[in-house]
Image (tube, rainbow, N blue to C red; front, side, top):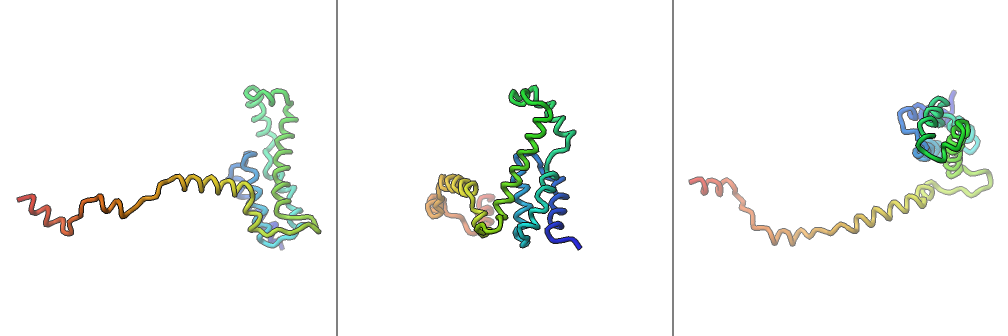
Length: 168
């Protein structure tokens, strides 16, 4: 029988085919996986067992790496200084580093302090986003409904009577 962690991983891997797998989206994708594994109650060893497989699943196939390299080497100066192999390796390394960073934000080596999930969710990025949204909301002026009602002419209760009077 498959463990809950492997079932969660299989589900994530299947859904990954329909998600944005650019390097910019890797953190969100890995966060989704490891948060679900953490919430399911998996221990460090169980979760660590799927880490390398998850990294491989998110890394681009070699053919995609070659295609992207050929396209970008004429457009991006620092990529032109790299060989195809160096470019693909650096791409894969970046994805692996992102995955490990997200993994270790949820799972700790034995003896390290456990942090509740609520505290993990309130990271610096989330706080910065909240502050930006709060500034935008505070910039919107409040509408005073009573002042608007005073400025509006009183509405007739029976509009049909008013229309009938004007038609004659």
